[in-house]
Length: 130
Image 1 (cartoon, one colour):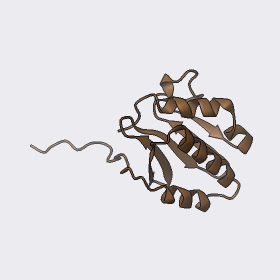
Image 2: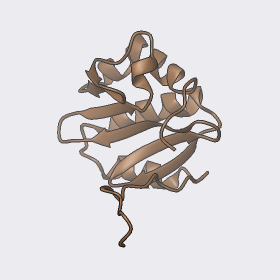
Image 3: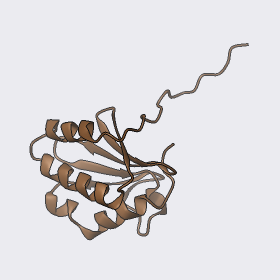
Image 4: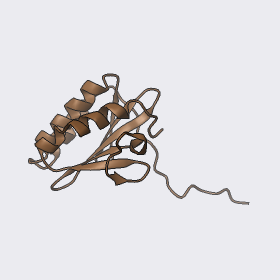
């Protein structure tokens, strides 16, 4: 009898201590998004100093040793999605999504919002995607 194959082959990215691929990815995105991504990246690195990094599927991942991947950044043409893998557990939760919650950031001012900083901090408190 044949073994069942998983419906998805999506596996978590391999963690790295090297931030260079993330920095290069930020520079390769739409020019209007680069300051937003650079600010979010800086906030994440400050809030999660032990973070590991990965770049997979043209998305940036930030993870913690005991929690897995906790934040994903996705750059589109006019906005950045900040995905929090345990976002449904946040107080208050980000507005979009179900289990993994996210917020669309369209400007540097939105990236600097206190709620975004709060969610980034809360991301380090909950298990993410392993």
